[in-house]
Amino acid sequence: MTTEAPASTPRTGEIVSKAEERRVIFASSLGTVFEWYDFYLYAVLAPFFSLLFFAPGNPTAALLSSFVTYAAGFLVRPFGAIVFGRIGDLVGRKYTFLITITVMGASTFLVGLLPTFKTVGWFAPTMLTLLRLTQGLALGGEYGGAATYVAEHAPTDKRGRATSWIQTTATVGLLLALIVIWICRKVMVKDDFASWGWRIPFLLSAILLVFSIYIRLKLQESPVFRRMKAENRGSKHPLKDSFFRYPNNKLVLLALLGATAGQGVVWYTGQFQALFFLQNTLKLDALEVYPLIGASLVLGTPFFILFGHLSDRIGRLKIILAGCVIAAATYVPLFKGLTHFTNPALERFQETVKVTVAADPDQCGIPIFRGPWTEFSACANAKDYLTSRGISYEQLPQVASKPVVVMIGDTAVEGWDGKAKADSEKAAAAALKAKGYPTAANPDDVNVPMVILLLVIMVIYVTMVYGPIAAYLVELFPTRIRYTSMSLPYHIGNGWFGGMLPLLAIIGALFLRETPKNFDIHT
Image 1 (cartoon, rainbow, N blue to C red):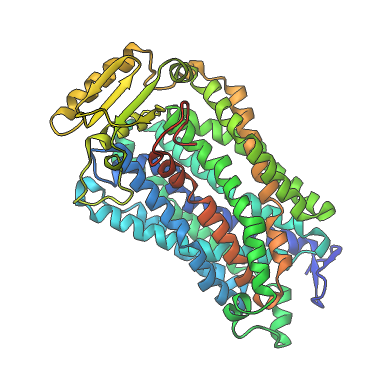
Image 2 (tube, rainbow, N blue to C red; image 1 turned 180 degrees about the vertical axis):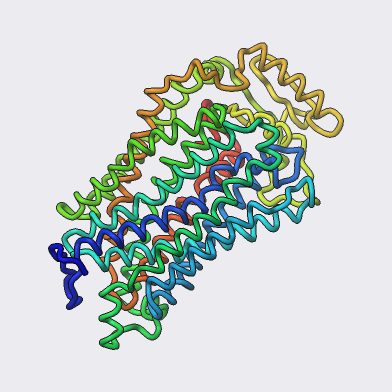
């Protein structure tokens, strides 16, 4: 203890100094930043990994497989929340997130040692998926512990401000991942990064892991939890008490459907979907995309603290719901604006050249889960060709006796199957070139200030919905089951509703029978 003015934590019977509160916030936030960094390395490199860890021959199918692996880490997060949330409510917050950060760091380090598809075939994506699942389980236990731990050290009237520092960690972790990957790609030639340089960001996690464990070992258990244990008021069955007893089970549903589901979608749209959209759909080089996203994160991150502090004054839910409503109302023009200011040549092409695919819709499926047995139809090959180039198209009924006909303006391209596939792709490439299709975004055409402005607006939406959410969840549930109760709805909302967004966006567009003009498949 220090002689600084105390910041009492209500109902604990203990005094927490301001210095101790700051130390708790710093140590908890820093460790959580490193854990998000580990988790998001794969997310940033998912398009790149589609060529490295999955079977060649169909880029869209490989990208889908890469996003399935990306999504796998999100799908298991609620299960990690159940397992580690129970441990956190029984044993303590501190020791639980020591376990989770160790599991996360070790899994990330092992990703950096994996052989690629070229070396070991299907064993590569299998092992990558297993490690991604382990990462998801660890993250499912980390966030709830860190948020609960910080909140239980903070005064009630300052919980929004205190926990908002934890809320910055996901964005700062993403920013750190972008910076490390950008440096590696910038200083290496392309072939070196593809061969071995991509491993460096993952191997660095071992250093971050040692540092995180050292810092967290110096922390004490939260005063609220210590007092609860001393008075023998802890729950012996936190899972049962959280999800099968009224009114707590009602509060879990309220937290999920009333807050975290919408918040998760806004978070992943404003950061990862924007990243993938610029890189995959608008064809802007990754070395150009990372600084744009990074600048928006730097400019937008302080708003987490602003909205967290504001939630202490006017309420948490008002800010969260306002962010969701404003985001839903403005996302379409924002993404259209990104197209206009990033790749105006692509925008002109889409507006002036009509592209259609005439085929039997039942023969056009691109498999989500791909294995050695997977075969692709002529229609799937044609749609892959257009999709991988960010070209919007309209699907039409099949032309009699012709399996697939792709119209690029007034030019028809048939075939697309077997030996004819290569000739069809050459004919399509010639037609696209003649019609003015840009194969990549021209960096000189990018209106950098406007792109950053649009990205910052999306990040501000993120800060509105995410800044107050930790304090909101902590205050919903009693101490004895808080870790378990808040973790599950948070990770369902963010892991399933938010984290599945990139995969669902591609699947939804690919399986639309009729694709409206100017519909971008990645939005």
